[in-house]
Length: 455
Image (tube, rainbow, N blue to C red):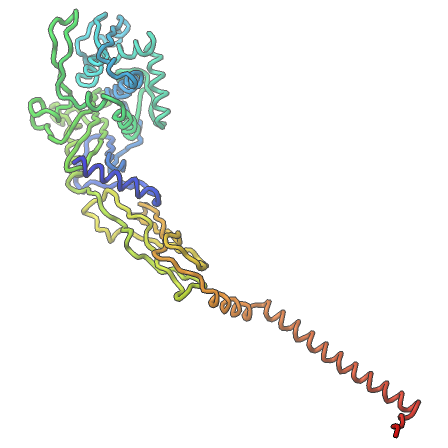
Protein backbone atom coordinates (compact mmCIF):
# COMPACT_ATOMS: atom_id res chain seq x y z
CA UNK A 1 0.00 0.00 0.00
CA UNK A 2 2.74 2.44 0.98
CA UNK A 3 4.73 1.62 -2.17
CA UNK A 4 1.74 2.38 -4.41
CA UNK A 5 1.04 5.65 -2.60
CA UNK A 6 4.71 6.64 -2.88
CA UNK A 7 4.75 5.78 -6.59
CA UNK A 8 1.64 7.86 -7.20
CA UNK A 9 3.15 10.83 -5.37
CA UNK A 10 6.47 10.62 -7.25
CA UNK A 11 4.73 10.36 -10.63
CA UNK A 12 2.43 13.25 -9.82
CA UNK A 13 5.28 15.54 -8.74
CA UNK A 14 7.30 14.64 -11.85
CA UNK A 15 4.38 15.46 -14.12
CA UNK A 16 3.92 18.86 -12.51
CA UNK A 17 7.25 20.06 -13.96
CA UNK A 18 5.91 20.26 -17.55
CA UNK A 19 2.18 20.18 -16.92
CA UNK A 20 -0.20 22.85 -15.72
CA UNK A 21 -2.79 20.87 -13.76
CA UNK A 22 -6.31 22.08 -12.97
CA UNK A 23 -8.73 20.63 -10.45
CA UNK A 24 -11.76 18.62 -11.56
CA UNK A 25 -14.35 16.90 -9.42
CA UNK A 26 -16.68 14.00 -10.17
CA UNK A 27 -20.34 13.44 -9.42
CA UNK A 28 -21.78 10.58 -7.43
CA UNK A 29 -24.09 8.21 -9.32
CA UNK A 30 -27.64 9.37 -9.91
CA UNK A 31 -29.88 8.49 -7.02
CA UNK A 32 -27.11 8.64 -4.41
CA UNK A 33 -28.21 10.53 -1.29
CA UNK A 34 -25.75 12.62 0.71
CA UNK A 35 -27.48 13.90 3.82
CA UNK A 36 -24.74 16.34 4.85
CA UNK A 37 -25.18 19.91 3.71
CA UNK A 38 -21.52 20.11 2.70
CA UNK A 39 -18.88 17.55 1.79
CA UNK A 40 -15.32 17.65 0.49
CA UNK A 41 -13.21 14.65 -0.54
CA UNK A 42 -9.46 14.91 -1.23
CA UNK A 43 -7.17 12.20 -2.54
CA UNK A 44 -4.13 12.59 -0.30
CA UNK A 45 -1.80 10.76 -2.70
CA UNK A 46 -2.14 13.44 -5.39
CA UNK A 47 -3.86 16.22 -3.42
CA UNK A 48 -6.70 16.16 -5.96
CA UNK A 49 -10.19 17.18 -4.90
CA UNK A 50 -12.41 14.48 -6.38
CA UNK A 51 -15.81 15.30 -4.91
CA UNK A 52 -17.40 18.32 -3.31
CA UNK A 53 -20.80 19.56 -2.26
CA UNK A 54 -21.33 23.15 -1.07
CA UNK A 55 -17.62 23.20 -0.27
CA UNK A 56 -17.47 26.97 0.25
CA UNK A 57 -20.67 27.44 2.23
CA UNK A 58 -19.99 28.92 5.68
CA UNK A 59 -21.27 26.54 8.34
CA UNK A 60 -20.89 25.97 12.07
CA UNK A 61 -17.99 23.50 12.59
CA UNK A 62 -18.90 22.30 16.10
CA UNK A 63 -16.03 20.25 17.55
CA UNK A 64 -14.11 20.16 14.27
CA UNK A 65 -12.85 23.42 15.76
CA UNK A 66 -10.65 21.35 18.06
CA UNK A 67 -8.45 20.39 15.10
CA UNK A 68 -7.21 23.98 14.99
CA UNK A 69 -6.84 23.98 18.78
CA UNK A 70 -4.58 20.95 18.44
CA UNK A 71 -2.57 22.70 15.72
CA UNK A 72 -1.71 25.66 17.93
CA UNK A 73 -0.54 23.40 20.77
CA UNK A 74 1.46 21.07 18.52
CA UNK A 75 3.17 23.98 16.79
CA UNK A 76 4.19 25.31 20.19
CA UNK A 77 5.93 22.00 20.99
CA UNK A 78 6.93 20.72 17.54
CA UNK A 79 10.64 21.12 18.31
CA UNK A 80 10.29 19.29 21.64
CA UNK A 81 7.34 16.99 21.12
CA UNK A 82 8.27 14.69 23.99
CA UNK A 83 7.62 17.56 26.40
CA UNK A 84 3.89 17.10 25.79
CA UNK A 85 4.10 14.04 28.02
CA UNK A 86 6.01 15.77 30.81
CA UNK A 87 4.35 19.18 30.89
CA UNK A 88 1.39 19.29 33.28
CA UNK A 89 -1.09 22.15 33.36
CA UNK A 90 -4.43 22.94 34.91
CA UNK A 91 -7.24 25.37 34.29
CA UNK A 92 -9.01 27.84 36.57
CA UNK A 93 -12.77 28.08 36.89
CA UNK A 94 -12.86 30.42 33.88
CA UNK A 95 -12.10 27.41 31.69
CA UNK A 96 -15.20 25.62 33.01
CA UNK A 97 -17.77 28.32 33.74
CA UNK A 98 -18.81 28.87 30.12
CA UNK A 99 -19.39 25.13 29.69
CA UNK A 100 -21.89 24.58 32.51
CA UNK A 101 -25.44 23.74 31.43
CA UNK A 102 -24.48 23.63 27.73
CA UNK A 103 -24.35 19.86 27.28
CA UNK A 104 -20.68 20.17 26.31
CA UNK A 105 -18.69 16.97 25.89
CA UNK A 106 -16.27 16.34 28.74
CA UNK A 107 -13.55 14.00 29.98
CA UNK A 108 -14.37 14.87 33.60
CA UNK A 109 -11.27 16.99 34.09
CA UNK A 110 -11.69 19.15 37.20
CA UNK A 111 -10.78 22.71 38.12
CA UNK A 112 -7.12 22.75 39.17
CA UNK A 113 -6.47 19.15 38.12
CA UNK A 114 -2.95 18.70 36.76
CA UNK A 115 -3.05 16.94 33.38
CA UNK A 116 -0.30 16.53 30.79
CA UNK A 117 -0.67 18.23 27.43
CA UNK A 118 -0.56 14.78 25.86
CA UNK A 119 -3.56 13.60 27.88
CA UNK A 120 -5.37 16.87 27.16
CA UNK A 121 -4.87 16.30 23.43
CA UNK A 122 -6.24 12.76 23.65
CA UNK A 123 -9.17 13.90 25.77
CA UNK A 124 -9.95 16.67 23.31
CA UNK A 125 -9.58 14.66 20.10
CA UNK A 126 -11.11 11.34 21.24
CA UNK A 127 -13.73 12.35 23.80
CA UNK A 128 -14.19 15.85 22.33
CA UNK A 129 -13.63 17.25 25.83
CA UNK A 130 -14.42 20.96 25.77
CA UNK A 131 -12.72 21.62 29.12
CA UNK A 132 -9.52 20.11 27.70
CA UNK A 133 -9.68 22.58 24.79
CA UNK A 134 -10.14 25.52 27.16
CA UNK A 135 -7.29 24.40 29.46
CA UNK A 136 -4.99 24.19 26.43
CA UNK A 137 -6.14 27.60 25.21
CA UNK A 138 -5.75 29.21 28.63
CA UNK A 139 -2.18 27.98 29.12
CA UNK A 140 -0.84 28.41 25.58
CA UNK A 141 -2.56 31.80 25.42
CA UNK A 142 -0.58 33.01 28.41
CA UNK A 143 -3.57 33.02 30.73
CA UNK A 144 -5.94 34.41 28.07
CA UNK A 145 -8.24 32.20 26.03
CA UNK A 146 -8.88 35.15 23.72
CA UNK A 147 -5.17 35.38 22.92
CA UNK A 148 -5.29 31.73 21.93
CA UNK A 149 -8.36 32.28 19.73
CA UNK A 150 -6.50 35.12 18.01
CA UNK A 151 -3.69 32.64 17.31
CA UNK A 152 -6.25 30.26 15.79
CA UNK A 153 -7.53 32.95 13.43
CA UNK A 154 -4.02 34.04 12.50
CA UNK A 155 -3.16 30.45 11.62
CA UNK A 156 -6.32 30.06 9.53
CA UNK A 157 -5.36 33.19 7.60
CA UNK A 158 -1.82 31.87 7.06
CA UNK A 159 -3.27 28.67 5.62
CA UNK A 160 -5.41 30.67 3.19
CA UNK A 161 -8.73 29.88 4.86
CA UNK A 162 -10.64 32.99 3.81
CA UNK A 163 -14.05 31.66 4.90
CA UNK A 164 -13.11 30.74 8.46
CA UNK A 165 -13.40 32.62 11.75
CA UNK A 166 -13.15 31.22 15.27
CA UNK A 167 -14.48 32.75 18.47
CA UNK A 168 -13.65 29.89 20.86
CA UNK A 169 -11.33 26.89 21.18
CA UNK A 170 -13.94 24.16 21.78
CA UNK A 171 -16.51 24.66 19.01
CA UNK A 172 -19.70 25.33 20.98
CA UNK A 173 -22.08 27.58 19.09
CA UNK A 174 -21.12 31.22 19.38
CA UNK A 175 -21.91 33.99 16.95
CA UNK A 176 -19.34 34.62 14.23
CA UNK A 177 -17.84 31.14 14.59
CA UNK A 178 -17.79 29.43 11.20
CA UNK A 179 -15.78 27.64 8.53
CA UNK A 180 -16.34 25.69 5.30
CA UNK A 181 -15.74 22.11 4.26
CA UNK A 182 -12.93 23.25 1.95
CA UNK A 183 -11.21 25.34 4.64
CA UNK A 184 -11.63 22.54 7.16
CA UNK A 185 -9.87 20.15 4.78
CA UNK A 186 -6.96 22.58 4.43
CA UNK A 187 -6.75 22.92 8.21
CA UNK A 188 -6.88 19.15 8.72
CA UNK A 189 -4.24 18.42 6.08
CA UNK A 190 -1.94 20.88 7.78
CA UNK A 191 -2.63 19.31 11.17
CA UNK A 192 -1.63 15.93 9.75
CA UNK A 193 1.78 17.35 8.87
CA UNK A 194 2.50 18.03 12.55
CA UNK A 195 4.06 15.39 14.82
CA UNK A 196 1.63 13.21 16.79
CA UNK A 197 -1.57 14.66 15.33
CA UNK A 198 -2.48 11.71 13.11
CA UNK A 199 -1.37 9.22 15.73
CA UNK A 200 -3.56 10.84 18.38
CA UNK A 201 -6.59 11.56 16.22
CA UNK A 202 -6.69 8.02 14.80
CA UNK A 203 -6.42 6.21 18.14
CA UNK A 204 -9.52 4.18 18.98
CA UNK A 205 -8.91 3.98 22.75
CA UNK A 206 -6.48 5.69 25.11
CA UNK A 207 -5.78 5.39 28.81
CA UNK A 208 -5.23 8.67 30.62
CA UNK A 209 -2.86 8.87 33.57
CA UNK A 210 -4.07 8.82 37.14
CA UNK A 211 -4.21 12.23 38.83
CA UNK A 212 -4.92 13.62 42.27
CA UNK A 213 -8.58 13.91 41.21
CA UNK A 214 -8.66 10.55 39.43
CA UNK A 215 -6.53 8.08 41.41
CA UNK A 216 -7.04 5.34 38.82
CA UNK A 217 -6.12 5.54 35.11
CA UNK A 218 -9.21 5.82 32.93
CA UNK A 219 -9.78 4.74 29.35
CA UNK A 220 -11.48 6.97 26.81
CA UNK A 221 -12.79 5.99 23.36
CA UNK A 222 -12.99 7.85 20.08
CA UNK A 223 -16.37 9.33 19.20
CA UNK A 224 -15.97 8.24 15.57
CA UNK A 225 -17.78 4.93 15.90
CA UNK A 226 -16.84 3.96 12.36
CA UNK A 227 -13.41 3.02 13.74
CA UNK A 228 -14.63 0.43 16.24
CA UNK A 229 -16.51 -2.77 15.52
CA UNK A 230 -17.48 -2.89 19.21
CA UNK A 231 -18.75 0.68 19.52
CA UNK A 232 -19.82 1.25 15.95
CA UNK A 233 -22.07 -1.69 15.20
CA UNK A 234 -23.54 -1.15 11.74
CA UNK A 235 -21.58 2.09 11.39
CA UNK A 236 -18.24 0.28 11.55
CA UNK A 237 -16.15 0.67 8.38
CA UNK A 238 -12.80 -1.05 8.50
CA UNK A 239 -10.98 1.40 6.23
CA UNK A 240 -11.75 4.55 8.25
CA UNK A 241 -9.32 6.23 10.65
CA UNK A 242 -9.95 9.24 12.92
CA UNK A 243 -10.13 12.18 12.96
CA UNK A 244 -12.82 14.25 14.67
CA UNK A 245 -16.55 14.30 15.11
CA UNK A 246 -18.69 17.30 15.96
CA UNK A 247 -22.35 17.65 16.84
CA UNK A 248 -24.52 20.64 17.71
CA UNK A 249 -28.11 21.57 17.03
CA UNK A 250 -26.78 24.51 15.01
CA UNK A 251 -24.14 22.42 13.22
CA UNK A 252 -25.81 19.05 12.75
CA UNK A 253 -23.44 16.10 12.67
CA UNK A 254 -19.95 16.85 11.32
CA UNK A 255 -17.03 14.56 10.61
CA UNK A 256 -13.40 14.82 9.56
CA UNK A 257 -12.04 11.38 8.69
CA UNK A 258 -9.44 9.42 6.76
CA UNK A 259 -9.77 6.20 4.81
CA UNK A 260 -7.09 3.90 3.37
CA UNK A 261 -7.62 1.02 0.95
CA UNK A 262 -5.59 -0.66 -1.81
CA UNK A 263 -2.89 2.00 -1.77
CA UNK A 264 -5.27 4.94 -1.96
CA UNK A 265 -5.82 7.42 0.86
CA UNK A 266 -8.58 9.99 1.23
CA UNK A 267 -9.52 12.83 3.56
CA UNK A 268 -13.23 13.59 3.87
CA UNK A 269 -14.98 16.51 5.54
CA UNK A 270 -18.76 16.39 5.97
CA UNK A 271 -20.79 19.09 7.72
CA UNK A 272 -24.34 19.58 8.96
CA UNK A 273 -25.85 16.13 8.53
CA UNK A 274 -29.22 15.58 10.25
CA UNK A 275 -29.16 14.16 13.77
CA UNK A 276 -32.45 12.27 13.53
CA UNK A 277 -34.60 10.53 10.98
CA UNK A 278 -38.20 11.41 10.19
CA UNK A 279 -39.41 9.33 13.16
CA UNK A 280 -37.16 11.16 15.61
CA UNK A 281 -34.65 8.34 16.00
CA UNK A 282 -31.02 9.32 16.47
CA UNK A 283 -29.12 8.48 13.30
CA UNK A 284 -25.47 9.18 12.57
CA UNK A 285 -25.96 10.44 9.05
CA UNK A 286 -22.39 11.77 9.03
CA UNK A 287 -21.14 8.17 9.29
CA UNK A 288 -23.60 7.01 6.65
CA UNK A 289 -22.44 9.75 4.27
CA UNK A 290 -18.79 8.97 4.91
CA UNK A 291 -19.22 5.29 4.08
CA UNK A 292 -21.24 6.13 0.96
CA UNK A 293 -18.61 8.53 -0.35
CA UNK A 294 -15.63 6.35 0.54
CA UNK A 295 -17.13 3.24 -1.05
CA UNK A 296 -17.87 5.19 -4.21
CA UNK A 297 -14.29 6.49 -4.31
CA UNK A 298 -12.66 3.10 -3.73
CA UNK A 299 -14.94 1.35 -6.22
CA UNK A 300 -14.83 3.92 -9.01
CA UNK A 301 -11.73 6.09 -8.80
CA UNK A 302 -8.27 4.98 -9.85
CA UNK A 303 -4.97 6.51 -10.86
CA UNK A 304 -5.16 6.55 -14.67
CA UNK A 305 -2.77 7.42 -17.51
CA UNK A 306 -4.46 10.21 -19.48
CA UNK A 307 -1.58 11.14 -21.81
CA UNK A 308 1.54 9.06 -22.51
CA UNK A 309 4.94 10.64 -23.04
CA UNK A 310 5.61 8.17 -25.87
CA UNK A 311 2.46 9.02 -27.84
CA UNK A 312 3.15 11.00 -31.04
CA UNK A 313 0.61 13.80 -31.32
CA UNK A 314 1.31 15.86 -34.46
CA UNK A 315 3.75 16.93 -37.18
CA UNK A 316 5.13 20.46 -36.96
CA UNK A 317 6.28 22.05 -40.28
CA UNK A 318 9.93 23.16 -40.13
CA UNK A 319 11.66 25.47 -42.60
CA UNK A 320 15.19 24.76 -43.88
CA UNK A 321 15.20 21.21 -42.49
CA UNK A 322 17.95 18.89 -43.69
CA UNK A 323 16.23 15.98 -45.41
CA UNK A 324 12.69 16.65 -44.17
CA UNK A 325 10.39 19.57 -43.58
CA UNK A 326 8.72 18.55 -40.29
CA UNK A 327 9.31 17.10 -36.84
CA UNK A 328 6.97 14.99 -34.72
CA UNK A 329 5.95 16.17 -31.25
CA UNK A 330 4.90 14.27 -28.14
CA UNK A 331 3.91 15.23 -24.56
CA UNK A 332 6.89 16.40 -22.52
CA UNK A 333 5.66 14.28 -19.62
CA UNK A 334 3.12 11.55 -19.14
CA UNK A 335 0.01 12.85 -17.41
CA UNK A 336 -2.00 10.76 -14.98
CA UNK A 337 -4.66 11.62 -12.44
CA UNK A 338 -7.39 10.13 -10.32
CA UNK A 339 -10.12 9.26 -12.80
CA UNK A 340 -13.62 7.83 -12.63
CA UNK A 341 -13.58 4.41 -14.29
CA UNK A 342 -17.17 4.85 -15.44
CA UNK A 343 -16.15 7.75 -17.71
CA UNK A 344 -14.48 6.59 -20.97
CA UNK A 345 -11.15 8.24 -21.70
CA UNK A 346 -12.41 8.95 -25.22
CA UNK A 347 -14.67 11.62 -23.71
CA UNK A 348 -11.62 13.70 -22.80
CA UNK A 349 -11.18 16.44 -25.39
CA UNK A 350 -7.66 17.03 -26.68
CA UNK A 351 -6.82 20.41 -28.22
CA UNK A 352 -3.40 20.73 -29.84
CA UNK A 353 -1.78 24.12 -30.46
CA UNK A 354 1.42 24.09 -32.54
CA UNK A 355 4.07 26.78 -32.89
CA UNK A 356 4.10 28.59 -36.24
CA UNK A 357 7.09 29.46 -38.48
CA UNK A 358 9.45 26.96 -36.88
CA UNK A 359 12.94 27.20 -38.42
CA UNK A 360 15.69 24.58 -38.30
CA UNK A 361 17.79 23.65 -36.45
CA UNK A 362 15.43 21.93 -34.00
CA UNK A 363 16.74 19.96 -31.03
CA UNK A 364 15.02 16.93 -29.56
CA UNK A 365 13.08 18.16 -26.53
CA UNK A 366 12.41 21.66 -27.87
CA UNK A 367 8.93 22.90 -26.92
CA UNK A 368 6.90 23.33 -30.10
CA UNK A 369 3.33 23.46 -28.82
CA UNK A 370 0.85 22.53 -26.12
CA UNK A 371 -1.77 19.86 -25.53
CA UNK A 372 -4.84 20.91 -23.55
CA UNK A 373 -6.95 18.15 -22.01
CA UNK A 374 -10.48 18.98 -20.93
CA UNK A 375 -13.62 17.21 -19.83
CA UNK A 376 -17.11 18.65 -19.60
CA UNK A 377 -15.80 22.13 -20.29
CA UNK A 378 -13.28 21.96 -17.44
CA UNK A 379 -9.57 21.94 -18.17
CA UNK A 380 -7.73 18.95 -16.75
CA UNK A 381 -4.20 19.89 -17.76
CA UNK A 382 -2.11 21.80 -20.27
CA UNK A 383 0.99 19.85 -21.33
CA UNK A 384 4.02 21.00 -23.30
CA UNK A 385 4.55 19.26 -26.65
CA UNK A 386 8.21 18.66 -27.52
CA UNK A 387 10.15 17.50 -30.58
CA UNK A 388 10.85 13.77 -30.63
CA UNK A 389 14.05 14.17 -32.70
CA UNK A 390 16.59 16.76 -33.78
CA UNK A 391 16.53 18.28 -37.27
CA UNK A 392 19.64 20.00 -38.64
CA UNK A 393 19.56 23.08 -40.85
CA UNK A 394 20.18 22.68 -44.59
CA UNK A 395 22.11 25.74 -45.84
CA UNK A 396 21.39 24.87 -49.49
CA UNK A 397 17.70 24.58 -48.72
CA UNK A 398 17.93 27.81 -46.81
CA UNK A 399 19.55 29.64 -49.74
CA UNK A 400 17.08 28.25 -52.26
CA UNK A 401 14.17 29.11 -50.04
CA UNK A 402 15.51 32.59 -49.43
CA UNK A 403 16.04 33.08 -53.16
CA UNK A 404 12.56 31.85 -54.00
CA UNK A 405 11.13 34.00 -51.30
CA UNK A 406 13.04 37.03 -52.58
CA UNK A 407 12.00 36.45 -56.19
CA UNK A 408 8.38 36.33 -55.17
CA UNK A 409 8.57 39.41 -53.01
CA UNK A 410 7.78 43.06 -53.70
CA UNK A 411 11.41 43.88 -52.95
CA UNK A 412 12.51 41.72 -55.86
CA UNK A 413 10.26 43.53 -58.33
CA UNK A 414 11.31 46.89 -56.98
CA UNK A 415 14.97 45.93 -57.35
CA UNK A 416 14.30 44.56 -60.84
CA UNK A 417 12.60 47.79 -61.91
CA UNK A 418 15.47 49.85 -60.57
CA UNK A 419 18.03 47.63 -62.31
CA UNK A 420 16.18 47.73 -65.64
CA UNK A 421 15.79 51.45 -65.26
CA UNK A 422 19.51 51.91 -64.67
CA UNK A 423 20.30 49.65 -67.64
CA UNK A 424 17.97 51.54 -69.96
CA UNK A 425 19.31 54.86 -68.75
CA UNK A 426 22.88 53.65 -69.26
CA UNK A 427 22.05 52.39 -72.77
CA UNK A 428 20.38 55.66 -73.70
CA UNK A 429 23.36 57.57 -72.33
CA UNK A 430 25.81 55.51 -74.42
CA UNK A 431 23.72 56.00 -77.55
CA UNK A 432 23.47 59.72 -76.92
CA UNK A 433 27.22 59.98 -76.35
CA UNK A 434 27.95 58.09 -79.55
CA UNK A 435 25.62 60.36 -81.50
CA UNK A 436 27.25 63.43 -80.01
CA UNK A 437 30.75 62.17 -80.82
CA UNK A 438 29.71 61.22 -84.33
CA UNK A 439 28.20 64.65 -84.99
CA UNK A 440 31.27 66.40 -83.66
CA UNK A 441 33.51 64.37 -85.96
CA UNK A 442 31.39 65.25 -88.98
CA UNK A 443 31.47 68.93 -88.13
CA UNK A 444 35.25 68.86 -87.74
CA UNK A 445 35.58 67.22 -91.16
CA UNK A 446 33.65 69.97 -92.86
CA UNK A 447 35.75 72.70 -91.29
CA UNK A 448 39.20 71.29 -91.81
CA UNK A 449 38.70 68.75 -94.46
CA UNK A 450 39.60 65.22 -94.40
CA UNK A 451 43.25 64.70 -93.45
CA UNK A 452 45.36 63.33 -96.35
CA UNK A 453 47.14 60.15 -95.82
CA UNK A 454 50.94 60.36 -95.96
CA UNK A 455 52.67 58.39 -98.61
